[in-house]
Length: 634
View 1 (cartoon, one colour):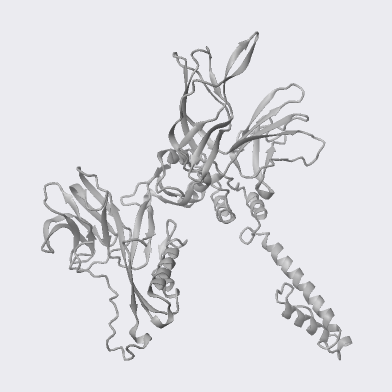
View 2: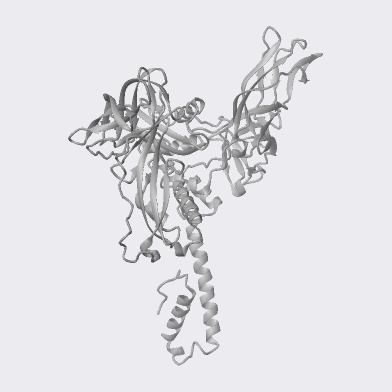
């Protein structure tokens, strides 16, 4: 009798299989496997089989990118399909300063590679460096202006290797972790002639020959990096005996973000003639204070294992070409690291269609929208992948707020205090608001999960009735006649009596008092009109019955030209609507935020029936499951 399962991970099952196998052998017909010394041998065999099965299972798991957990294995598997995981990224700031060298008769001034400035952040002081020197010629007044120089958070280091062709598997591994690989610079000094050649980072294989001076960087164990060169056919091979000099910046990643106050600590020099030779002479005076056009930003930590496992097969599927929307979703994070989530969609999906365009929306890890500089950097990085004729356009993300009004019934006999239960419910909802279900483009608020999240907080909770609303914030062009389009991209509920849409107050030029907006559906319930009104003794007084249109199916509000002079809420008008479905999805450039602040409401109600106060339920009145549409304003 053969074993029917070689990778069983249950010790008792393995032991039973061994005994069954021995019983089937006529030589052991009358043995007592439980009471004899045979039991010890069987335990040893089962234990050995268990350890072997476990090791086999773990080893096989590490052979596939989906199941691998060790970083070195995940990186190796990603490398096999051409994916290069992102290293740490140094926070980058821009500084400007001037140097007066009028008394030195300097032809040019050089800011040498290395430490340039010290930046202060709340959690400490950080060093900022540049990976290569910057040379500026002074103007006619003898002042050299260093304008918007990019500086990188971290320490500038160098490492030298000597090429030894007698070693068959020679490796050039940088000894430091936390390296920003974009700051790596490589030069090779010929051991015979002393000629220095600069090698550039590999970008693509096109037009590469035996004389192409290129290098590759790949991550190896312990988050260190190896420098690779050509073999003399594809890329130039450094000659035997030559010296390889590698410089790089070791960074603190995201910790370096936010520095805006810098003190100069750099090394400036100018060439001064000494006989027949030029000698680099330090410049230590007449250096202005640093101005900071851009505080440090976009610092990021090394790409996590989960991200590598997610992106590697998708980038491979795109074959490093940007054609479909999914290609852009895969490639943009590899081009620009400071990304929390990305959405891309073709212009053909719009109404009216815009063919030949792809629209990209990015939620950065820091801040709410991308700067123009970041957008330009992403566009530049995508050029090598894009197909001619396809234009990329960036669309700033829009937040779609979801607010809840939850009434939670509970049995007071099972809790310590009402306040403690309320706090735990709030924390549970807040935790769900940060889950992967919601926090991404294409994310979806799942109503059943929200209800379940509340119910699971404590066994004292007997039920909850939760109603939700959607909200968008309109930022008006104050004092200007303007049209507005507010898209929710989720179908609205259309009660034919109106007031499915409500707003905070605002003022319109030429109209006295606070103004509000609401809707009135047409008889088909598919479209409707926007109406402006004021309140007179808490009763709506309509001042404009054709202020715009509503498309309940598309989830879209359009306001005709109106001059809004001010608003009650600072810099915005809050507009809430009742959704047709309690499941809310973020489409295109919308990003869902489950609002756990003042816009939402949590009420705890004692369950009189469960607590025993009213066993018959004759006085118990459950709260309404519907949004109150009799309110006129938000």
